[in-house]
Structures are given as C-alpha cells and as structure tokens.
Image (cartoon, rainbow, N blue to C red; front, side):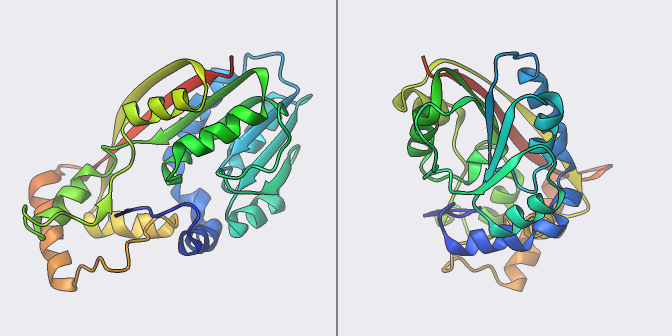
Length: 264
C-alpha cells in the first residue's frame, strides 16, 4: 500500500511539491503557526554553531532561524527542486542544499541542532531518516521536529472508505502513529525522547475544498490503481457533509506530533 501522500523518494511526489512551490506559502498558514511555536522551543539555545532545517520548503522557517541565530551557520535542505528554487529567490542568512532526508550529504558530527517542521510525514522510512540525523549530529546535539500523525484527515479517510464498503480496505497507508515515530527514534539511537501531540481542527467549505488544498500544496498523490470516479467522489462528499458539517463548514482534523531527542 502507499500513503495518501505517497513515498518521499518517488519522482511524482517530488514533481508535485516542486510544482506547488509558488503557492505553497499562501496555502500553509497552519504550517507557519506551528513553525513559530517550534522555534520558541529552540530559540533560547545559545551553544549552536550550526543548525540544519530538514524539509525547508520555500525557506520560511529557515529564514526565521537565521533571524534568531544571526551568528550561527544555518543550512536548509529540501528534496524538491521547485522548493529549492523558491527558497534561493528569497533566502537571507542561510545556505541551501537539495537533498533527500533519507540520504543527507553531510559529514558525521556536523550539526548542533537539527530542526524540521511538518516534513517527516512524507518520509516512508523514519528509522533510516533518523539514523541519518543521528550520524550528522554532534555528540551533544538535539533533534527537534513536528510532523503530522495518524489522525490527520481522518474524516477524509472515513468518507472515502464509506463509498468503498467496510469489507474493502482502502489501498492507502495512513500516516505514522506517535508510538511508531518514537520507536523509530529509539531504534536510530536517540536518547531522552520527549513527545507530545495536539489535534487541530481546520474548516473547509466541503470535501472538494480539502482535496484542492492538498493539490495546492503538492500533497495529493494517490496510488495509481486507486481510482474514485466522479459518482463515488460525489457520494463521499455527501457523506463528509452529512457527518462532519458544523456552522463553520466541514471539519478536518490535523494531528501534530511534537518530538525532541538528544544524540547522547
């Protein structure tokens, strides 16, 4: 099976994120709010000579890190060429490398802090990606990140399932659970793991607006053999409207994991 958001190292999803780069910042106000809170958790650290931002997107968070850590070497990485181009157009105070979270091209013990905001949900092999982080962190280094979790868009999954029948499993892989993520950190060698989560409700006009939003940020790649025709999609939309409507529109849940871990 494949994720609703597909594999990180798959060329179609790379192209999808690249194509969404121009409108990504407009559509991701929630990402920025979470990113601001993430920065608050690390901005008091005074011993950072180098910081790596994994999955920087268009570089908004990376730029904020450069603002709060003016004497620190800041480096941002993203696997999508469109995001890298957009970040280079507006970068200030940080360096950029196009790289995959599963294959980070840095020497061992290069960074004091690795930070990532809502990027690791795209990574299929979390253990391997965390092993990459563990290797390039200094001995007293810290990994601090957020990611979307299993309950994200649960209403959409339920609505799509409603038109497939209970006996027919959707060929879609849900995002990781918090326990899976913390276990991957332990297996990668991390210590002192701190975790928390929250669920945020976002309102859309209808289910199709959610799908358009996903397409707008480049996160709508479905498995090729998973097809929902117009009639079934319409029925799924009716189910969504009936089950999840309130005075503000239709609800969509976003589960956010907050994690922090040290190398030693």
